Image (tube, rainbow, N blue to C red; front, side, top):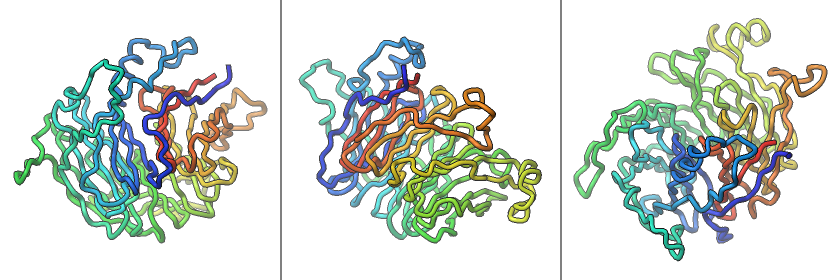
Length: 435
């Protein structure tokens, strides 16, 4: 049976009223999903998807071809609709990586109003939401807001376009139209790097210690709007920190930011590959391969090389390294016509359980593509290797949205499930069945 990508449900219907769905984010444990929307009807929707995980755990056959089909679209419950605080399009949302002992989700949102807000769910609020089995109740019309803002981060001069947490929740990065990247140090109870207990949130005029943020750095270097950011492991190749930050811009470049002695600096600039705006970045779970999607219609495939490999394989580039111990990101492949020459709006690398080398992309051609890397054992004459990878389209969802596919995301725990959102305002569920 060939691989396939099938629509299995609609969480939010298409409105075609000028209210695009911009960004989707899952919590680290996959229990929650948040979607943000733009004008004319700016808001955030948060769904509880715990039942999906319960079914997954009970079957223990997520990757099996014989797994019984279940309609997961009926198991996602809308628990909150956030309409307060932001006054313009909400462009990005991202859940903080909370500890497994903490069940309260923490969400960051970024808006064209220049603000970044941090939201925390009421303690035990999700347990008190409607769990009725009455089929006459449409839970997707619920207007309850179970989240309260616990912090507001200001500093960007204009539109904020993307957010990214590091793996422990100790850092939050934001970027925007003002060509800057801000890095905030976070002191949030409940995150992996924070306290194991949650504090009370702000109520009325009494501000409790729901979490503090300190600006560590304002990174300047891009010559255009910064569109996408993502944290990844440094592999001890840049700076002294465990992680580096990648940023993609309207200036057609990707920059790598590293930390040394508390200061963040530009460790490398990846350029001369894309001829137009880089809209999206996707990093593999290992952090050893990076994908970039551009308005030029191409997807570039980047590989990380250690400092030792750089000196041996790329001696001519040694002089360009900021430090002799720096590694190297090199473009090792390109899909020049990934979405029929339309812009690549979103890229997301699959979780490890999906199988080696799966990548999802959404484009300006209204389609969603799933790519698979072909291994050397699957092709003749060693045509492909990690230095010259070969990717093929494994599954396609034509006309996935009635407009640009702004975001596509894999569920972090269920390798058969994806979510997409688009210019048409729709939020859709997809089932990926691999061959």
